Image (cartoon, rainbow, N blue to C red; front, top):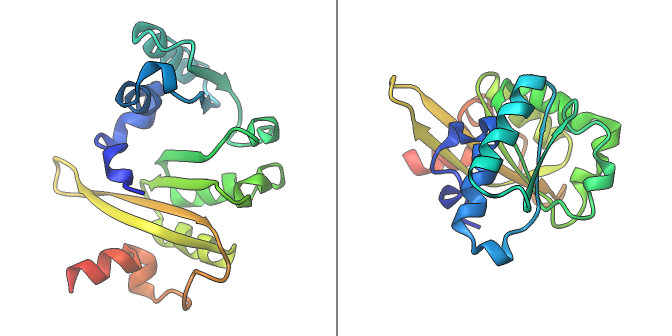
Length: 178
């Protein structure tokens, strides 16, 4: 799938804006249910305000929760899990939670945007049996880049262990640079 069309604004995951962007881009009557999770009260409050202001309260809910902990009840409906704006170590920790084991189900895609420790996250994904679907490098205004990783659980599709450079920048990103 083309994740770039859903991630025009990588920072939009904050405060419910990514779910808002995805819902706006689909016809309202076919918009899937989205659940925005956050641990901080102010983040959830801000997300709820943005969702309501966009008139999308029927298709998006903001819930206070620690990562994916306690999210197993959401699993039958979840197909895309977006975790953005935090370090790669924390993203790996969230995905490793035993209560989030359902992210390994068929049909679940992870869309991850680590701000730091991208190599730690890529190594964890490989070690945990996830295959990378696609990767993007999106320039920020300050000269640095956002790294976006889309992956799904597929131990037989993940390829050889990652080199240091592949862990840092992504196998697909490096191949595009050649």
